[in-house]
Length: 112
Length: 113
Image 1: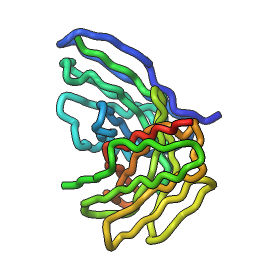
Image 2 (image 1 turned 45 degrees about the vertical axis):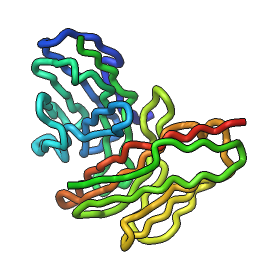
Image 3 (image 1 turned 30 degrees about the vertical axis):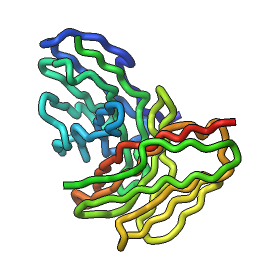
């Protein structure tokens, strides 16, 4: 089945460490998104990409960077992790003009 | 800026009907989406309204009034498996053929026997 996958699924790290979260999709979609979810705050958009050469900041991009290595891959990096970046991170994809975003299973990140 | 308001929690019994309201304030409004998320799971798409009116998909229906900046999700014949969080999300058109979602804080629905 065409799918959205995220690695790792869980990660515990220490303050100041560099962390990369990876997202891959086999849906052939060109739009990809990174969200962060904190309890009671819903999902907030970190970065989004409409194609390999088009990357845009979302609501809460400070402290994060991204790389769109190919149409199918979109990585999120925390250059120097801090405890308030502890959260659940979701990658999502959608096709051009599509109504539905398809979410990966999420990465639970804990920064000590 | 943008804001979305939805109730934080709703409790109902099996077989009942639940309506989750969502009011929004945003520029560049294109449509309203609804997503379901079970504990520990990923959000999954339920419905999308771009035009005023009611969209029905099985036991779930979604309504939009653009003039009132208001929508709702109606869950009918509630089942235990409907216990989950439900998020409304405003779709805004940023660029041609692109879209961006802004999510509400979610409504936790608890279905009791």
